[in-house]
Amino acid sequence: MMEFMEGSHAVAHSVKHCRPEVIAAYPITPQTHIVEALAEMVANCQLDAEYITVESEFSALSACLGASAAGSRVYSATTSQGLALMFEVCFNCAGMRMPVVMSIVNRAMGAPLSIWNDQQDSISLRDSGWLQFYAEDNQEAADLHYLAYKVAEDRNVLLPAFVCFDGFILSHTYEPVDMLTQEQADSYLPRYTPVQRLDSADPISFGLFASPDYYMEFRYQIDQAVKGAAKKIASAGREFGEMFGRDYSDLVESYRLDDADCAIVAMGSICGTVKDAIDEMRKDGKKVGLLRLRSFRPFPEKEVRSALAGVNRVAVLDKNVSLGTKGAVALEVRDALYGQQVPVLDYIIALGGRDVRKKDIRAVVDMAGQGKGDLFYGLRQELVS
Amino acid sequence: MISLRELRIHGRGGQGSVTAAELIAVAAFAGGVYAQAFPAFGVERRGAPVQAFVRFDNQKVRLRSQVYEPDYIIVQDSTLIRDVNVFQGLKKGGIVIVNTEKALTYPIPEGVKVITIDATSVALKHLGLPITNTTLMGAFAAASGEIAFPALEGAIRQRFPGELAEKNVAAAREAFEFVKGVS
Image 1: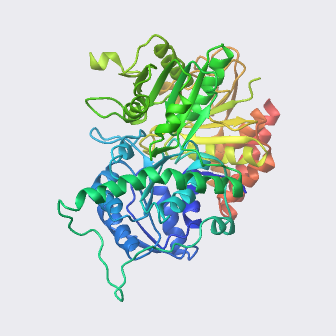
Image 2: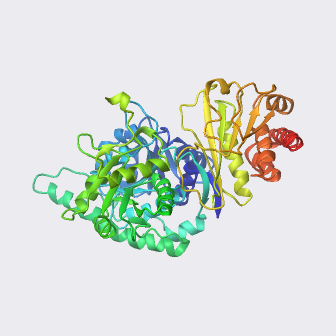
Image 3: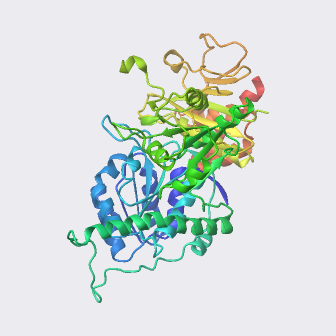
């Protein structure tokens, strides 16, 4: 049913429908509304879950890790510095193959302190073994949580997953969202049956010491699982589409790319503004299209290569920067296109909440046309020269 | 064909600008319009200038930037006009609703319609508090035609409990009728 609600609340309701058995989280702007709503649902007996209040994000994810090892479906949410504080536990969740699902309400990293949006936080965990999905709007932010559990808990995947959506720009925006009912959610996502779990009657251990004779094989298997998750995303995404009309089987979305000269590549809410800008540029006869990455881990290498096969230039919008080199998305898109002649130009954009308008997208496309890229877009020159 | 319409609300922290944006959008959605409401994301402090935005469209709104060229502007506190260029970007033929008990002495851009209403007095009369958001929502419904009054009433009742809802509806209705009378 179409409901008009805040992004955070849409996500909280989706999470409730997923029936997590343990939730542990620490409030941090702009994620707070989600965990407040969930705490209220638990307190009001609308959600039968153990809500563990903790003193830090490190403990929040540690509690989730332990509860997941004990065989529970678990949930957390965080952002920015909170995610940074979870860094160690993130690697442990992936290494112990715990299907933890966590919402990342994307926010810039300090210092300087910024509560505003970019995607530096989750991007900085790109090497941790977590799946990473990026939502364009609140519908997707809500839906991707069902998909995330379904994929993460699959016995051929068994990996934790981030559902990333832009802080404030989505989390604090009210818009229509088609919410599933609990019955619909249950029919899509059955109760969690762990493959292995901690059980005093049948003791096993997770996360033990691995000597040089064993460590690399563990890492190899995690890598294989991340890559292999694409297959499960395809089937689980298709099933979601068949049941509810919104298909998430593709790791990417192409928008007016078929005859495009210039392709923009981006992730998250900026893609809505990009689509509107593309429609305007198309009216002016400019052949521009968008390739939106919905999944960053697994990275859709093949899809990027095939979607961008016909274009003359690629402009990547990176809401992050790997300081000292380029934006993470551009680096990986360039890698996917290795050996092809098409120039891939990177634009570091919208860091720390700087607003992006349609005219900025047009300016990027013009710059790409002149071969000008690999730069921070829209810098205030008087502050940096 | 351009179907997108945009509203920018200027207020001070504590005046309920974000709630106003939300409830206007709820009312528009109830009327079958696609609406999007969001605040200018700042560090909210009581008294500091704040903004909130609403987009209305007949189709899904994808645009995520802030509102720079609004069709409608609501100014909850006329003292803001000294500090903030509240009229910035207003479209020709646009409508501005200002809460003030005096005639505006500030230069008004050409080709726009300005409606002044003493929303503070209306709010004080009905709520006993100078919180003007619901009053100005009534004025907006009448001036813009974007939302029907019953839908606005519904949004207010859904948000506030019992008697508080009735007081807010009464304030909104007085403003709605006042603006219907002057425009």
